[in-house]
Image 1 (cartoon, rainbow, N blue to C red):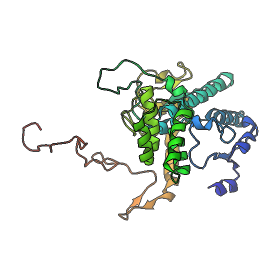
Image 2 (cartoon, rainbow, N blue to C red):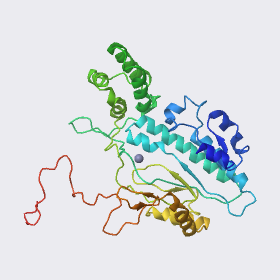
Image 3 (cartoon, helix red, strand yellow):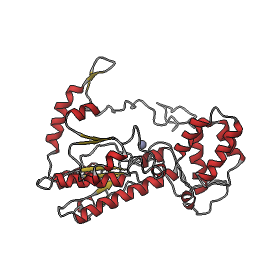
Image 4 (cartoon, helix red, strand yellow):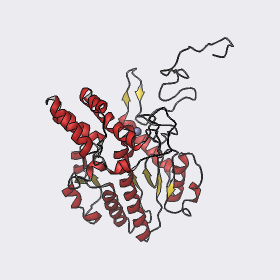
Length: 356
Ligand SMILES: [Zn+2]
């Protein structure tokens, strides 16, 4: 892909040095492709110690905004940018409140950068910030014992930590699994103290970390969550999940429990005030930009057919997906019973009226 991009005349950057060479956008020559990490950029709580390797979300946002603004200064069409705080979701999946709060703060800085840009720029624009789902079922409350809980949450615990559970587990797996148990124990306890700021760890917690290193990421995150009295209901996505894609003007994504919509101007975005279906965010952005989404959708569908492939059943599968018949769900899960969870005891009595 990189070779293809370079062949097509893309400017290409892949590290802090080449990113800095963009001079906050003034040295950008579009089109530009920037791939600054092999997989995910490290969590912000880890990245902030590695600022010399990876630029922050806010820095990348500022660079992109300035480059796009300069590139469209003589155009009457303006530009659209999507900035995603994508690892808030990952930290939710990991149930790691320490990693997550730093992701949210990094996202907040990126939002501030966008707002500052809009304030200074002479061209009218709007920022819309929303999410397509919540992850983890995060709750600023957690009951640890049978006794009726105090109404307390301890976010201060999160201020004492400086590394993600993912990073700690990675270091543990990379460097210690072939070492004696005593080395592993001193690593685990020193990391709990130094990286997480936790000194009241129990013997059971340390024992679990030593006996089940494969769940180390889960344990490190859980040890922090319990002390912060931060609750989680799942390692997956929670209710209110919507996966409809929307074509958007300036859409920034992050998960919120009852998904919020923010905008840079309540006046410009008055159609988004109140409660909305997520597709209405796309409608708003399409109308604000006055772009013909149907035309581009048609073009994508036409050009996309060259990527069609044959499925196992020999039928052609389109990369654009298929249009489901009304009685058929896309995920093929329509055969699942209403409830098939761990606590299920009885088969439903079909055809009798006993009520079970
Ligand atoms: Zn997710």
